[in-house]
Image (tube, rainbow, N blue to C red; front, side):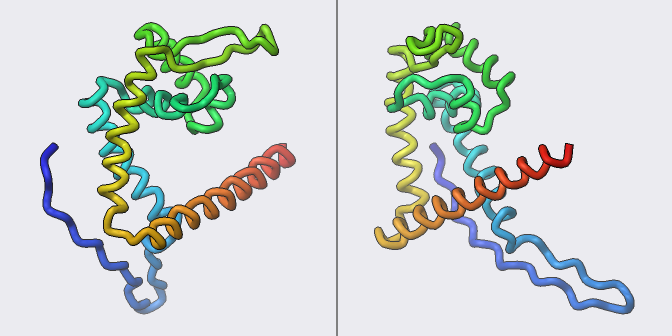
Amino acid sequence: MKKTAARSTPAPRSAAPATGRRKAVASLDDILATKVLTLAHVLGRSATLMYRDLLGLPLTSFRLVSLLGGRPPMMLNELALHSGIDKSQLSRAISDLVAQDIVSRRTSEDDSRAVQIELAPRGLELYATLSKHARKRNERLLGSLSDPKRAQLLTMLDQVTVLARDMLAEQEADARADR
C-alpha cells in the first residue's frame, strides 16, 4: 500500500457577508450530517479499494462478511437493518456469496419459513483476514488520539447514532401516519 502525504484539514468556510437584497447562503460544511457523510464516503471508498484488492470482494460483499463475522446466524431482515443495504440488493449479494462458498443459508429451527445466514468456513477465513486489516486501518485512523480521547470519540459517535436512529424512527412513523 502506498503512503501518501497527509492533507491538512480544511478550515471551515464562513458565509460571505450579505450584499444588497440577497442574503448570503450559509455553508453546511459545519453541519454534523455533512461531516459524517463526507467521512463515511472517504472511508467507504478507501475500504472498497483495500478490500477489493485484498479479498477480491465488492463493497456489499465485504460489508456482509464483516457483519456476519463473530455473530450468530442472522435473518435477512436483521442483515438489512444492520447493514443499511436494500433487501433486493442484499439478497443478490447473499446469493453471490453462497455461490462462492463464503456464506451458507439454512432453515431456521424456530421458524421453517425463515432462513438463517452465516459465514461458511471460507467466509470465516476471509473474516479473519478482513478483521486483521480493519484493525490496522482503525489504528492508523485513531492512532494519534490518546486513549481517553479515542474512547470519548467512540462514545460520542454511539450516542449520536442512537439519537439519529430515534429521529429516523420518528420520521418514519410520521410518514406512515400521513399516508
